[in-house]
Length: 444
Image 1 (cartoon, rainbow, N blue to C red):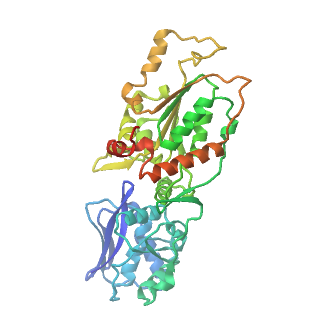
Image 2 (image 1 turned 45 degrees about the vertical axis):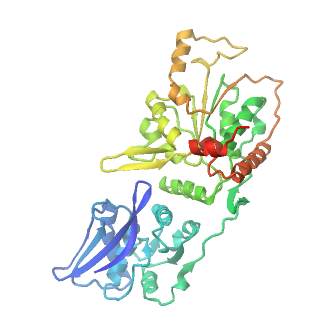
Image 3 (image 1 turned 90 degrees about the vertical axis):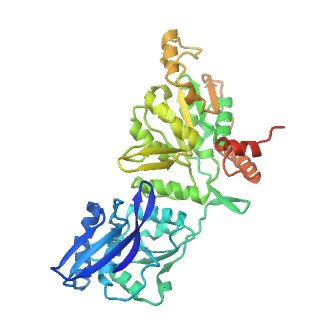
């Protein structure tokens, strides 16, 4: 029996898989066991075609491939390559255990990237399970961003076979990329950022207090709610907050790229925190998560914006209490429980009443006291207890002028970020736990 290492996703984390092979006497057949999903079962035809195209003859034996551990459901076409290699190298005496192998096979033997390869390798590196990995050339751009790993790359199945037969594997080695965005170094740790303000606070007229509150929210990671009449600039400020947030560690950038890959997007690796704004009609499952990853998990290390906060379903708002308090959320599924990190900056905007004119100096409010109270009661006190800043905004007048730019606010946020890190904080002020608050935040 021979075996190679690969991996499969369980939630958003990787689980190491041993791909084992046996060749026994009997009627020629090819079977894959070990709770493999349809994509893996279909790999038999891709593997046959790839091997036959490259002039390899199938042995007249009973081929059995086992994916261990057997009780875990496996998914993903990236297991094509390790299965094909075990068949092709079945008579070769080689030590194949030092490498994790990933790659989808084309019918002609060409190796292809999959969306999960980057996610799997990143997760395995963080678990300390992987040191050497063989991947398709198409995966180099993403995987080479991951530090502390030896990356080897091939273009075809034939090249992969030669790789394991070669004595000089350094010919196939790929250098890890150096991250080249602007950075600041604090206590020997690099933090990356960019000055790219697609929307600018310069566009916001007046609202000096609200802009100051937004800056405090960004600098310390403090959850914030803006309340005011329609048109006063609540959403404008919220959408600009993303661009003045603190710099990011490489691990945070990789986490965001991981979530982008899980959404079948091409990861950008830009040091820019995500901004996610689900519609108020979104279901609890889409916000919190269910069979798919919810918006709260996708917002990790970024900004989650709820516009028209009281219009969100009561169950959604109450379900937000766990991720806002514990910075993680547990989703129970049929055979497992999955935990997602949820360390995001929560921003919300709301009107003061159902018609929106309660605070207006020019428009008459059409709501009675009962309607206003019912509107306010949609947000519970336990939910509000997780909000650090609550800003009431006045209407904008024609005399109001723009007084600050995003770049000016961002520079001040960078200075505040430096101070937090120089006093030994791992987290921003708004995300400190009780023990850190007692040790770090000393009141004079």
